[in-house]
Image 1 (cartoon, rainbow, N blue to C red):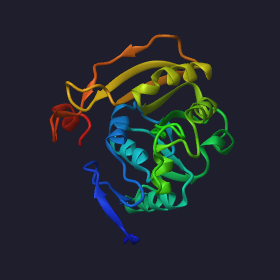
Image 2 (image 1 turned 90 degrees about the vertical axis):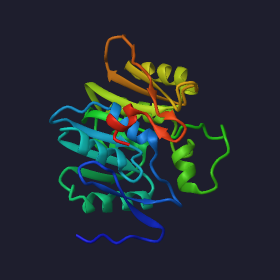
Image 3 (image 1 turned 45 degrees about the vertical axis):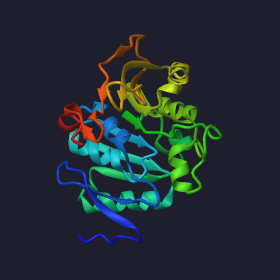
Length: 245
């Protein structure tokens, strides 16, 4: 099926399963954090997955390519992003495996019902609203700053829609790690795995990947860190081999 591209849009090859994604650089394009999150997330055969704040649908498409999950749903509030995500789903002939829903993360529990997913993922806005320069371009500002939802909104709604024993996977900034852990535990999402991401071996971490289990027992494993670049501009072997970037 021929998919029409709108102004400033392009097809990007995901190098996974022959899948492509529609992006618009004037709005928002996925980055390394989405790729890392998809590689960190564990989806078992037959599981149902929800991605909160899916943007152009990158996480559901990558998880479809990498796992044996039964069905993947992306929730996104911005109509333009929803339109791009839905057209990418159609372009890849994934209408039976991926659904894109337009809606507010703060209403996820009402939209989907309690305990309705085995796995929830999120690459939420990293910066507190007012905690940095807000991008004047609204789609980019919404993706990077807590304009429409907060960290607590994401975690609270995740706790509602995850089944008992279900898993939550998130990528965020290490500077907010204390807040992340405290908020997860507040909603009985027990942190179980954590992995720091460093741009270079001698640089401090700029991302953290975390897995939490609804109603899990306290036991947090800190895994070996990810080093993104072997040297400036050259991806590490792990990034190329495990994450396919």
